Image 1 (cartoon, rainbow, N blue to C red):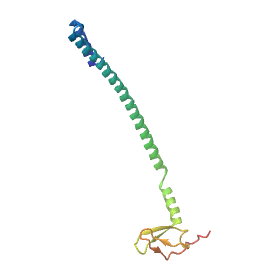
Image 2 (spheres, rainbow, N blue to C red):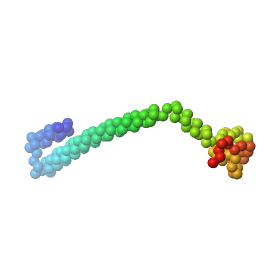
Image 3 (cartoon, rainbow, N blue to C red):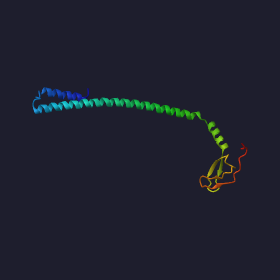
Image 4 (cartoon, rainbow, N blue to C red):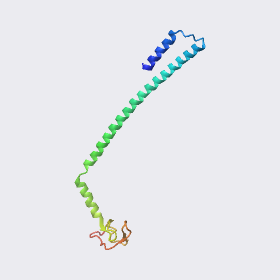
Length: 144
């Protein structure tokens, strides 16, 4: 029983103990006020009960989300541990075999071209300054 419910019960008991005559205008008015106040207290009690249920549900959701985040962070950390330095060295070696790095004679930008493009009939252009890059030789041992 909430504090408001206890107080309303006390007020209701006072009203009955005063032997208010509900035949008079003042008596009907006072009894109507007590009745409305009782309904307000019941509504407030219901709202408080539902609020408690919602808070419990929210807390449960927060716990589930927290656990989900921890699991995800653990899985992400596990993925990082699976890749070691040798894997990165292998990838870097594979990329170095596939791409040719060239310094643009105009702007000095380091530009990477697929080795299959070097020596082709297409003109290689610096993406930074749009200057044609010349003087590249065809890669060795790249015959298909």
